[in-house]
Image (cartoon, rainbow, N blue to C red; front, side):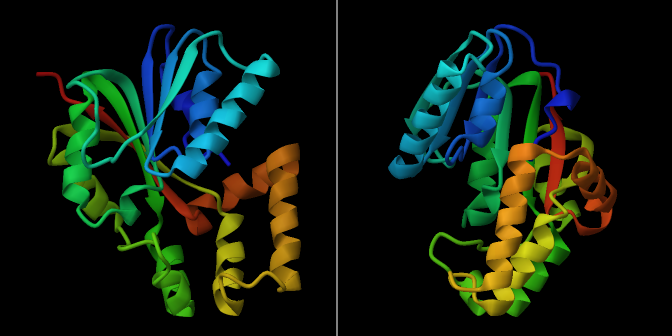
Length: 238
């Protein structure tokens, strides 16, 4: 499930791309598909980094890479092991809502970005997330769960205070919003809820097959039901 709209970004050969909080590597793999780029995925979880490594190797075997190189590292978003102004693109997708000290994290992801280059940040959208919190205390209080809900203005103000300017935004994954509401309603950790399982199979089918009619419906409903807020920033030149 790709949240970032890469078509909005001017990714050229030789670009260095950081996917911070990469998880199992969905955006790392997508970035690795561009021609002759250097893609780095970073996460705190060794387990998910292993999954990301296997996914990237599989993409290489299928010849779905752009001929560039990739690497993975265990790193904390609040203390990144990279030099200032190092990356041409930083992706931070569904990460900041997990971070207690989000100001330090915001400062770091902007510190490692080159002036004049792009940062893409996505977080759960306010209303769909607030409904999830209301429906389920288990969802709200899960380990490594979400510690805050961002309003659009709050997120943009936070990041712009560290020297970037917003130039675009959109919403994504409207079809996933009812799925999470259902999960929260029945219990987010239940595995025997038939309606939830059926909906999950539908979402998996959609991700794999990408049927145009379903993609159209998703785009149509995103402004209203999109689960993720995706904001594009550019770092100001010194």
